[in-house]
Image 1 (cartoon, one colour):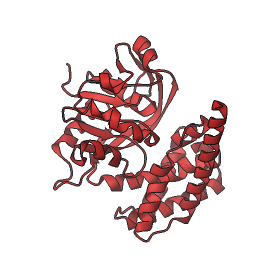
Image 2 (cartoon, one colour):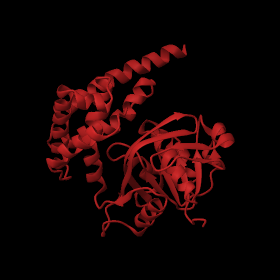
Image 3 (tube, helix red, strand yellow):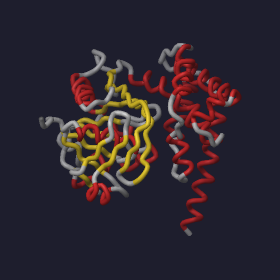
Image 4 (tube, one colour):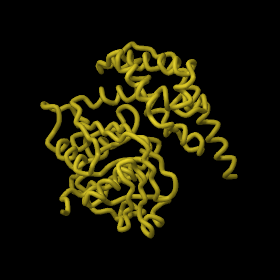
Length: 318
């Protein structure tokens, strides 16, 4: 049966490619806005390896420019936050008929940029708990997890709008573990309990999640960072219990060996999502009188490494 919701997916990396392909496989009309992969996917389609069952999509709606996209009911933003400066051009066409935007990005208050373009009442956010990599053009390898916690960007009189519930239902129909959350900001802080230590330490210590968990020293360091993030979250009104820290460590210990998205960006000398994942939480906590000194040190270490990587990229371009 053909589904009625039309989705746009901006960004065909490990996240956008995976969720977009699941939606297309379930019968939804999905339009992918791709850059380097556009011609490959247009000719060969998508290949997805997943514990849910490997599959391929041969007939794919591919766009190399946003101007050719049709108006969509839901436009998923799956770009890295480092590319959010492009959103005014990328969102104009697919949201032209009043469609909503679902921001699936890492970090805190990452919905703000989309809300400035289409209005906050048309924006939702989602926290993705996904271990997935793009291993070649048009080729996604999903390793573990996949849950999305989503909710409205603007607080509403009731926990979530009917639109949020409808999008949740579409995602579930596509085989995605999607759940509504009443407090999106709190959900993002809770995810930062993992994102800040394991994205950051994976870069500065040059280690996978498995290596970080196998070392007592790095595991203790991750725990101390988590405790700071929890204090920052609580200062900002997102109540997170101490139990979440141990639960997060246990989940990380049990997950398949995984390179964080930030580590992969660093290895490939791409800009890292430092501001969204560390900078914004640091500033919001400080505004409420809560300092996070270990997180701040990690933040400045990453800024230094990001600057060196940028200089190296510029040097290669001469």
